Length: 79
Image 1 (cartoon, rainbow, N blue to C red):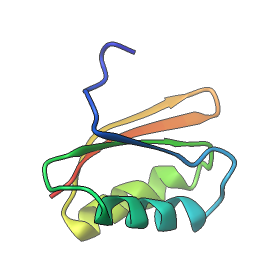
Image 2: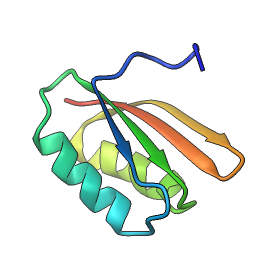
Image 3: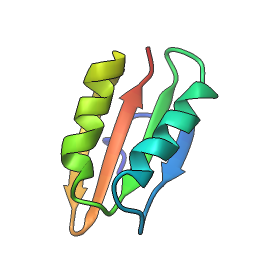
Image 4: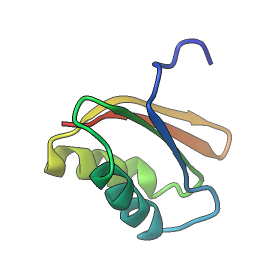
């Protein structure tokens, strides 16, 4: 896991399904500063579509999208 960037906050949405991970992300990024990195842990395969769209729509930078078994990791730099 050393290939992953440092992060300022972590959001674990394991066990939650659309739209809950995106709703929780939206709440989390409101409390964070621009330039901060958010790590998101998810188990919902829909996040592979929803999180990139979330980032694109709001102007955040999706640094890493990683899948391992049934776990999805995202590192997002906030705008």
